[in-house]
Amino acid sequence: MRSAVLIMVGLVAMLSVYGQTQKFTRQDTLRGTLNAERNWWDVTHYDLNVQVNPSDSSISGKNTIHYRVLKANTILQIDLQEPMVIDSIVQLGKSLSYTREGNAFHVNIRALQQPGKVQQLTVYFHGKPRAAVRAPWDGGFQWSKDSLGRAWIATACQGLGASVWWPNKDHQSEEADSTSITVTVPTGLTNVSNGRLRSKKNNGNGTTTFNWFVNNPINNYDVALNIGHYTEFKDVFNGEKGKLDMSFWVLDYNVEKAKKHFEVVKPMMKCFEHWFGPYPFYEDSYKLVETPHLGMEHQSAVAYGNKYQMGYMGRDLSGSGWGMKWDFLIIHETGHEWFGNNITAKDIADMWVHEGFTNYSETIFTQCIDGVQAGNEYSQGIRRNVANDIPVIGHYGVNSEGSGDMYYKASNMIHTIRQIMNNDEAFRQLLRGLNKTFYHSTVTTAQIEKYINLKVGRNLSKVYDQYLRTITIPVFEYKVVNGVLSYRWVSEVKGFDMPLKVTLSEGRYSFIYPTQQWKTLKLGFKDAAKFEVDKNFYINIKKVN
Image (cartoon, rainbow, N blue to C red; front, side, top):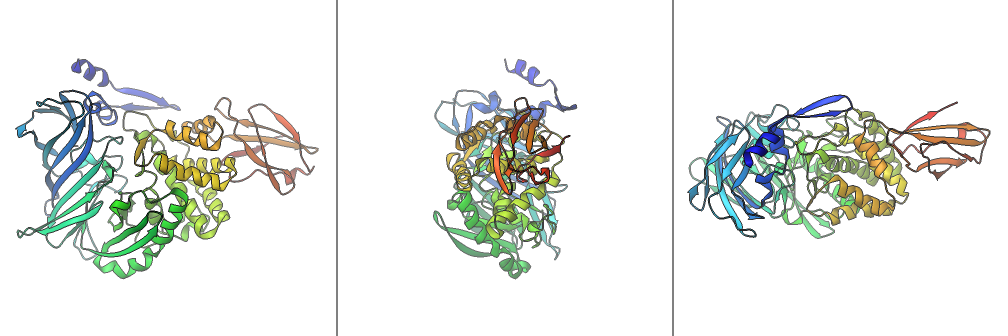
């Protein structure tokens, strides 16, 4: 039975997207699919212990996996990427046999797996994890030096997967209910991980052990090590759920600079709580951690590496000027605490749920500090980064991300939906409602679409198809002759019917409801030059004769 399954899923999948053929391997399927070896057990807790050895760029350790049995089975898949090695797997004091298939280990379970019961097994491992080529994009373990030549180490593994350095059930739908992270490093170095620091122990042998505990569910790729010569300073934010502990871990020589630069954090948190709801991880606190890479949304330990600059590495991604008034990495990566960490896509193909909404958090923050028009101009400006190369949504079941347009294009789809709603308070409640309804949950695009439809009071399925599943932007074609407007949508999405705001009378926007058939209506003016389309709708406009 199992061998037949292996033969079937071992076939190379070939999928065509707008003329581009993509090939997916057996390893892609093992990583991206919730197969029979994954579906029968649910992780309740990870107890990760790891020793980091900067001298030879190696690590070693163990991970005790607590899991609830959903249905009886005898084969369990554990993921750990090459060249890392599993030394042994132990359950109830007995070693378990396993076979390795690339980055997947098929473990033979000996003990009775009774549905409803919580079991545990311990995986012992070691090796030299893949070194990051260009973290966080091409991630792994980053073995760096600070400006004084001292060790400065960090992990960043989104997309690549947490199994690049520690053994786990490496699928985005799987989040342990809680996680313990125990890290041993050479004495003199400090490790900062997610959650709260429970203990620090000098082992008397040239090493120090730090234990961090995460009380909330956490994505595997968010589990992070940050190792360096850190100094901590603290603050408290009076938020919607009470006092939120905040701490900032920076290199010892950057403390004064950081104290000034990070003053934006409280206004940002106030803005985001107003628009998105309470910070989702009060129990685990909020940390901003300086890293040798640019940044990453490591839950409750947000990685920051923008070198205390405004904008994105000193640039305004929107070209509007507004993006130079705040530090992109602080705002964007913290926005992920709501979208990506609180609400997590089950499949990496739906990463727009993380990146589209988080990219829109930049527009929201711009509005909070400089007003609605500034936010609108920022949102319009980032459209210049849209590539329209492949669809925003990737291929399901093979660990395949879609286009990088999941940032700017998806964000502008959200901005467009805001215009369709035409009620900013209702839109704010939609964003807050998403975070409340899907609190600490993993979701699908279908769930998010259904929720938005409910709150908008309109079926926007054609809008989602247009912006998330095609590589084109809808075209609004129109002409004005003797004060009569003729108009229609041109779109490859059959039945595309998005409402649109235009000037039907001078200086005042009103809704029209174009379809793919020509319609006409009489304007309140005859001068065609006075006709305008609301720029906040992300569309192309074509005047025809």
